[in-house]
Image 1 (cartoon, one colour):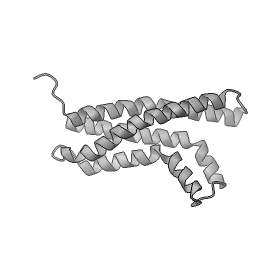
Image 2: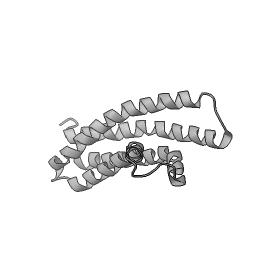
Image 3: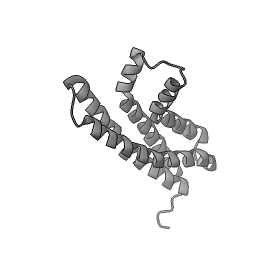
Image 4: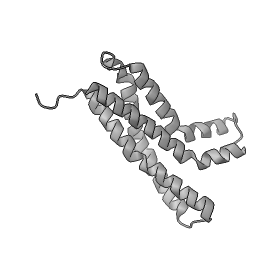
Length: 149
């Protein structure tokens, strides 16, 4: 029998590799923001960062679709692994990846003002928070792929 893997395992593999690939963009954004923060203004930083954020947004849509599919399909593999563990991992990953949007909504609806020093530091380290989210998605997808293959 030639390489018979489940559809869930295949989707997990796609999420795993997309998480790992997309992870490079927030790392680059973090390094660029640190250079600008400590070395001073960089003329082309805004153009490069804008392009990287657009690419990150487009790739995040694909990642989100895979994340949602795996979240709801996790119930189909309950005889091989715990669907609750997979769903919790994917939910944590989803929240961390979309932390900038969540914080922006909190500021927009005046839940927080956005003028706090903590928020300034949070925005500085936001690419690392996104990286942690993608790493959580990667490890969750890796575990799901391994257990359902």
